[in-house]
Amino acid sequence: MTSATTTMNAALPAEYRERLMQAAREVAFKDGARLFAEGRRADRFWIVRTGTVTLDLRVPGRRPAVIESLGHGELVGWSWHFPPYVWHLGAEAMTPVRAWEIDAEAVRRMCAEDAEFGRAIAVWVGRVVAQRLHASRIRLLDLYAPYGSGGLT
Image (spheres, helix red, strand yellow):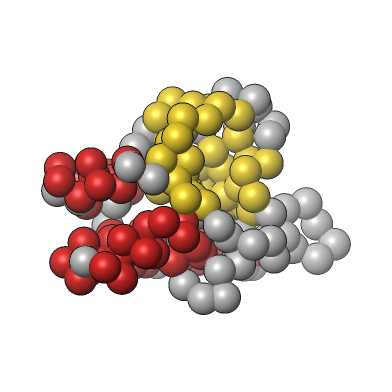
C-alpha cells in the first residue's frame, strides 16, 4: 500500500472530504516546528497542503529516528482517532508547511452521528495506520538491525 492510496483525496469521496473540511482551518509551520510530540494529547490532526512533515520515534540514547516523510494530501496524525487520544510518535516540519488543521473532537462527533461517514473515516485512518506501521518496521530494521531490512515486505 503506497501513500498515494492513503491521501485524503484518494481515500474519501468528495462529500465526506467536504464534511471533514467543516472542522478544518488553515495553518502554517516554519521548518523545524514541532506539530506534536510523543505522549502529548492528540486533539487535532493535519492534512499537508505544501511542504514536508517527518514522523519520528524517540529511541533511548539516540536522536529520534525519522520513520517517514509526508507530503501533499497526506494525513499527519492518527492517534486522535483511538483512545486514549495520545500521540505515539512525534512530527516536525522539515520545510515550511501549509496544512489544514482539523479538530479531532468535532470529527469524532461527526463519526458518531453518521455511521457511514464514521466508517469511511475509520477505513481511511486504518489504511494510514497499516501503511505507517509497515514503513516504521522497514525504517527501524534499516537503522538498527544487523543486516538491515533485507528487502522484506
